[in-house]
Image (tube, rainbow, N blue to C red):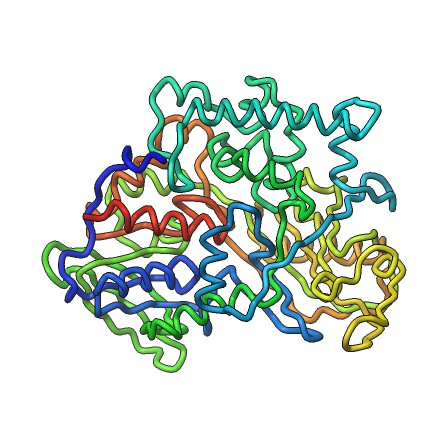
Length: 480
């Protein structure tokens, strides 16, 4: 494995330095834990919400946790698996099984069947061989371009490699005659709210969907896993067991960075203490979306140039209880006719109660829930919507709710009741293909620590739990 090729970065200079971590999501809590394990004693986390977790947001309903943000794991989620084992050992990682895909009006299929049809082969075995050949070719190309490396983000590619990976995911697949794999990238990217393959930069697709992930789909477990527990519990237990100093409901209004010890000035207020106060720190760790901090942090020209180039989508998750309705054979459904729309269609739904209680197939499709532990005749289901317009704007919110209601009516969900709805702004901040070609994602890595600041979270890697853990580990490994 290649462990060189990354730049050495600076960080806190003394274990007695006061360190401020802004953001109590998985990236902020994990980084604070890593720093504490290294001997740093004075770490304070500023969290805007009234609980830690961020997009790892879980809510208990009918005896199971429904996941509003992080949904499942893939075969490369080794860092998440390690945290489950360490902090929530009673949780089980279990196979998610297949997903239903609605290809036409109330006509459901599986994505495996669709992939087989995409090859044009008559038999499933012949289709599998063709897809396997394409995966093996992708593996060779991936290794040729990047070699072997230890972390999700590969070391900065050479100019020649940058030319070969320029453009979007679709550009890359077309350039290397790998369009047979396009449905996989659509499943892992577009169908999970990470952008369209003709828009998302190729490097994100190649980092998030390496050959090993696609290979996992050929296993009996299908390469996808769910947590029989709660993703948020991992973050909560990490903070608790490491005795982290978390300041909840902190409204950070301004961050100024001056030279010298104690030069980091954080001005904030809380709900219980609305009067503004300022605290001084020696080092700063930022985990929110960097483009959400442009009016809060005194970014210099170099930082502002990079972070102002980020763009993002938004995510809305709604937990609804209803009667009856039309459903496919599996608890998770992708609505293929909606997946390429960018104006908040319902593109997926997930019945966690059925998935975690192994109610699938005909039992799920027909609504037979007698083998469920609570005997509740109603269906409890999460619905996922994504779009680029601001979901908190009044007119956009009206559109979001209208599309959700239309979907429920279409699938004959009677007596629907919204139990909870969560909106994630600044979802998956990313650079365009052109900016990736300019090396911006590695420019941020080179800049880490230069201004007594580390930038972590999804802005500088990928919007997934595994990605932010991987990036934190990378920073700690090259910190000297």
